[in-house]
Image 1 (cartoon, one colour):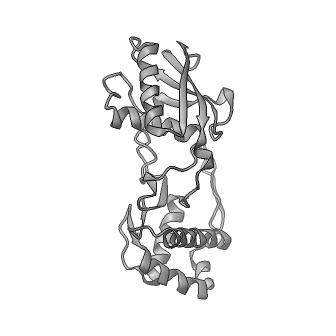
Image 2: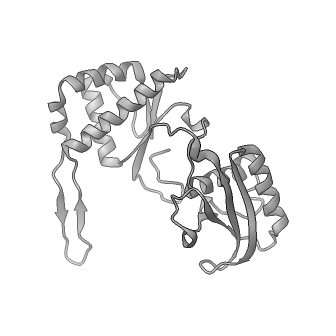
Image 3: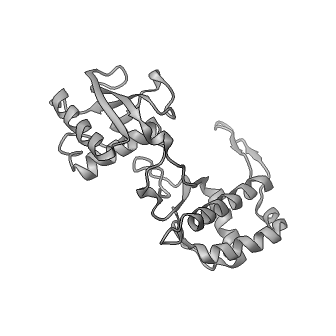
Amino acid sequence: MNWYKKAHLNKISSVTFWIEGSDRITQPMNKLDICNDLSEFVFYDLKLGRKLGFSSSDDFDPDTSSGDFNEYTGQINIYLENPAIKSGIISNILEQYNKEKELINLSLIEINKSGVRDVNVARVSIDKNDTVNTETIPRMNLANPNALALIQLLENEGMGNLEKPGGSINVDSLRTVLDNIDQNRYLLQTYTQEPSEETNPGQATMIDQGRSYERMERYINGLREMVDYIDNNNFPVKIINYG
């Protein structure tokens, strides 16, 4: 949830808007989400990531040969840079993860040689994923230029100077600004951008999809959805974070 698209990509690419505290509430998790969650569990909860030779969260990866990354069951792969890691260690990690999560159950299928990377891989089955029955909490992920346009709109309509590249938005103040924008939707046109295409000799063509009025409307509606969710669920901290 930051302006850097994971640690291994050292450039600004996208911005996520999310409700303060929502990251501690179980939400539907697909294979990619489970990989990220399992990685964080190993690195931060168990504090075993470096000890076991994992280099980054990229060592935990959905197995797309068994289905898309956004499916809720199937197989995930754990790439083992350290050849000394055997099935007992992986099974123990999965057992602790299952106890912690309750709604998810993972089991080790086998450890063998990866066909993608020159290392062993632990092939793990998602046997149970009851997170699919939990409520989805609204959030938004925007390309960096679109997030900047939205932030500029909020600033110009009364939010004051918002922190960049990431910060927080007071929901009570935001509600007032959204009410004003709802009554003056023509304001959104100022923040639109026509699609463009740029071609330089010997280089790839750069295509900018632009930013339509309808897209700006979706962003405003997305913020409104988060405000309403906070109000309807009595969140104690009325903050929307972005970054």
